[in-house]
Amino acid sequence: MAIRKHKTKAGRNTYSVYLKENGSWKYIATAPTRDDAKALERREREQAWQVGQGLRKREIEDTFKPMAVPWAEQRLKTHKRGCDDVWRMKKHLVPFFGESQVKKIDVALLREFISHSISVGMGATTLNQCVRLLGRFLNELVIDGRLPTNPVAHLDRATRKLFKPKHDPKNTPFIRAKTEIAGIYRELSGDVQIMFAVGVFAGLRTGEILGLHIEDVDLVRRTILVRRSYDSTTKDYDSRLVPINDSLLPVLTTWLTKLRRDMGLVFPPTGHGDFVKEHRLRDELRIAQKKLGSRGLTWYQSTRHTFASHWVEDGRPILKLRDILGHSTVKVTERYAHLAPDAFVEADYAAVFVDLKAVPTPSATARNEDAEHTGKES
Image (cartoon, rainbow, N blue to C red; front, side, top):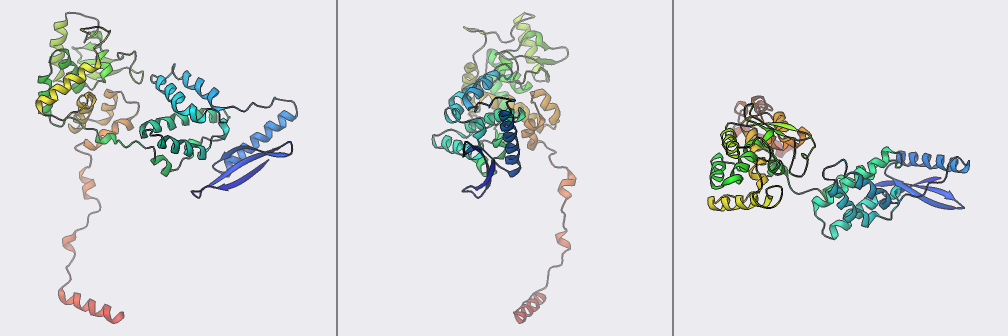
């Protein structure tokens, strides 16, 4: 068994582990640090000893495809967007890593995958999602003891910048003028008008609006229990309570009274299908925006993002907004923090203060004397 140090083209050191077998050196894997290489070496030594003593059979070299695809398909049971993970695994990751031995997937091979993906025109967002999915899979192998370290965690900052999404969520546009919100509401009609009100005044996602049931709306307590979407559950599988604000209360009251039902969808479909089609919302919003000469914002930007942005601008707490929006962590909600009117308190503005008026301005005579003195020294 041997560890060999290599220097990459970028000047970084890597450490490859080799095992002498039948008189020749066999490459095992590459680790980013010497400690990781030593850990891998110890594991291989122990395995070789156990095989030699007949205590265990030699492990078959695990390849990527037969391990990764079942792992991704298992996520269908535990992750709402597991179907997207399966698609990315089969479409992008398996064609590149499919026949590779899992323990030979190192930083160098990851960079090769990233360069290849960029060369064939893969978008930064898709590439970012693929690398993150690969990282989750390899991390499971680290936890199971099959890998000494996760190479995705050792990608340097320069490499990560290659697939960093260009979109900054803090710059997501929203309807800034409240008069414009009212204008769009008046231009819409029927159920789309009410759905717009639920989105812009309660912050519900589009699927949550379409899947909203009458029994989940409590006009007395002025709350909406968000516990489902039109395609089964909410995004994070958790239910949450959302307040019905002063603008939404009369709108919802009138609409529910008009329905004359105690159960079922708040917005039942008028045509075929089990739910109102999303394209109806987008199309009618676009028509209303053109009539008003407004910016062509998406439904999400015009409703949920507008609600969150104005909530913060009105001085309401970020933590409560996280609960209303149903974000898994406050870090996601903090994209709106820059809109807070008290983002900086008075003490922040007083920091690093220097009274520039108190500094005496040197006279012309003093400046000339300083110049002459400097000239003599030189």
